[in-house]
Length: 196
Ligand SMILES: [Zn+2]
Image 1 (cartoon, rainbow, N blue to C red):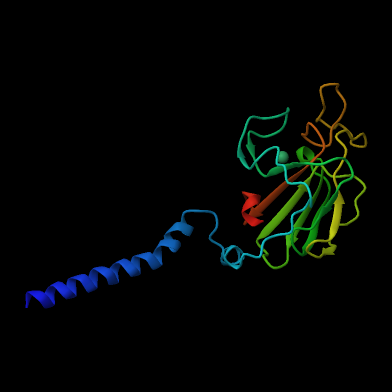
Image 2 (cartoon, protein in one colour; image 1 turned 120 degrees about the horizontal axis):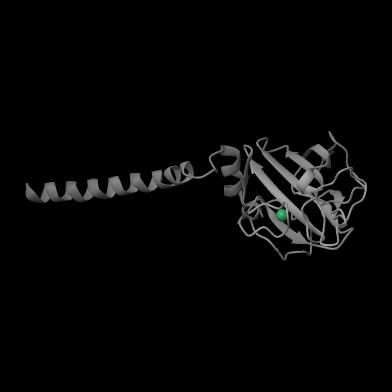
């Protein structure tokens, strides 16, 4: 009698443990911004995004809290900064539609790409060259050339509030040539490095 009870108890304990383990990922994902099923599929598939600046892997400012590097730049960094010289090629991280290609205040000359496969994900490229090679509503393929890194100083914007130490107007809130990349899931900025 006791032996049977003991066996049942051990079996039940193992059974409950296995069931609990199955639920751990669900509890875990509910506590983060990563609840969307497409986003989870992307992470599970291991099929990452195309790096926007091939050959440029140094990140001068990571996603998250930071000290503001220049007037008008945020203390909570909504993306990552990848330094590259003026004119460097920038590529589409995924296939999708260009929904914005214009001056974007603190972002300077900006492009927004709404993804095709993951319709709740948008990607912003900031501090670009004003000589755009894509327009709003253009469809672009993953890995397609879509822009160039812009100059630090730009002179075509009326009442541009962003200026460098010499008082010259800058390409948004920036201290030098770089690509600022923001990725938003359901409108909320997340760490871009999770996608590559
Ligand atoms: Zn930035």
